[in-house]
Image 1: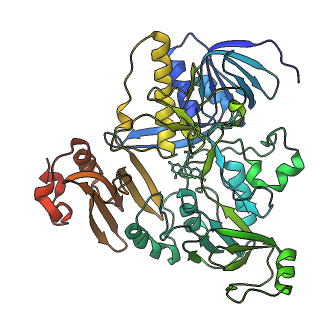
Image 2: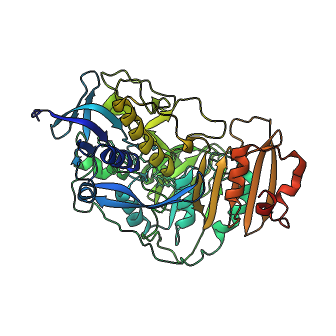
Image 3: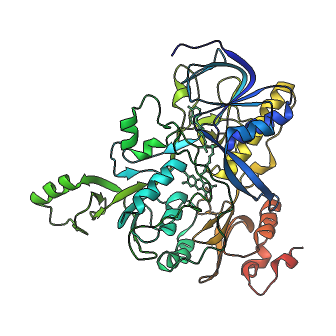
Amino acid sequence: MAATTAKRSKFVVVGGGIAGVTCAEQLASQFPSDEVVLLTAAPLIKAVTNFRQVSKTLEDFDVEEQPSSVLEEKYPNVKVIQSAVKELQAKEHKLQTESGEEFHYEKLCLCSGGRPKLFTWDNPHVLGIRDTDSAQEFQKRLSKAKRIVVVGNGGIALELVYEVEGCEVIWAVKDKAIGNTFFDAGAAQFLIPSLNADKPERALPCKRTRYTTEGAAPTCPPSTDRGACNQSPGLAGELGSALGPDWHEGIELRGAQEVSHRVHVEYQCEVQKVYTREEFTQSRQSPQPSSEPLTDTGLWPVYIQLTNGKIYGCDFIVSATGVTPNTEPFLHGNNFAVAEDSGLRVDDHMRTSEPDVYAAGDVCTACWEPSPLWQQMRLWTQARQMGWFAARCMAADVLDEPIELDFCFELFSHITKFFSYKVVLLGKFNAQGLGQDHELLVRCTKGQEYVKVVLREGRMMGAVLIGDTDLEETFENLILNQMDLSAYGEELLNPNIDIEDYFD
Ligand code: FAD
């Protein structure tokens, strides 16, 4: 389609996920008489609601999927345009959308998120979970499934294997322990019993408003025909916003069997090969290497061979092996510095290497010299913080004002739930980057709590708190003030000492 007359705006933000929406909101409230254009590929946008500052750095909030009109009503100077950006000409400060519209910007923030890193893209039996549509496709398939294989060891896999009921789950993880992205082996050990226990009843139904894109235009990239899009549900949701912390609430993840949890973990393995039923049957007719352990040969729609040699038949496979930043439409013809993990490199002002182009959320890689207690993780909270800070940096640049890196980048902090336990992660919670130069203190009460503290030269560098420990604020303070705790030794975790009083 030929481009129509270009529209000019001081601020253009790309992406209707948490990073993009937060950025647009902040810009709109700082510049009420300027128009902020939000370009997004998905029909719904994500908004932060019920924001709560739990402590100095810990924050908690709900996320709502909303029609873009809600944002436009709240901020009359925000204009949301639903069309994917297909090209950026950074030198000319110009963007083109799939629908043929052209936009000129003074300042641009790219918040296009990421998409699932599927281990294969062309297999209809392999799906990724990223957005509402792909979660619904997963639910639909699960309702008829007796066994699924989940590949991956990050947050999504962790939640999935726990949430799925009525279906056997084979969980293939590449590490020695589950949840390696978040936990050490000790915490994994603490959580493992929950995998095969009956799930506790949910206290309350999900209170958040949900919209679906059912009946809306397909979210496949326009270059992909509808057939191909339908074939691979991983692709189908490619340009939707990433789901958030409670994505599984409100959708029943139940398979076709009368069991609660049935999870089998295969450790230290990856995917070797995926067979269709026909390929598998044929391969069984030729002589097999005698060392290959065959785990299951019933009749299944698909078979997966793991690098430990085991083969499982299943109804379908979920690839939950992380995300790749959505950078493609922006790279061609421009000069972006791209990080090893494929994210757009940003400095401590959220600036990319292209003038007047900022980036925030899953699409970017923080390349400033980080605080010794912070690391980037592609999480909900960081998408919000980065979107908000990027807007403030754009504003500071426009107003020619100085701006310092925000305090939220001082200490990594994340609050979430895994296996129905409250989980708080602080600082270098897994001793990231500390090498051998650290010691650990652990307190664990089976089924109740797991507390781990990472110390270096007597100073607290990080902590993992699982369960209702009530220690987050005290530990956050101890990490932030870097007090020398050598004198306290193991007493630090003595359950009979009220540590809050102790350090008051
Ligand atoms: P996204 O939310 O991915 O939004 C990107 C936006 O850009 C979308 O609106 C998309 O339509 C748009 N877009 C993409 N390409 C284009 C284009 N070319 N043109 C225009 N628009 C475009 N985090 C947690 O903290 N806790 C959790 O428990 C958790 N669980 C998760 C579970 C799942 C299943 C998934 C997938 C993610 C989970 N995350 C979790 C991660 C979290 O959701 C992401 O880190 C966060 O949503 C990233 O926000 P974002 O705004 O950067 O990107």
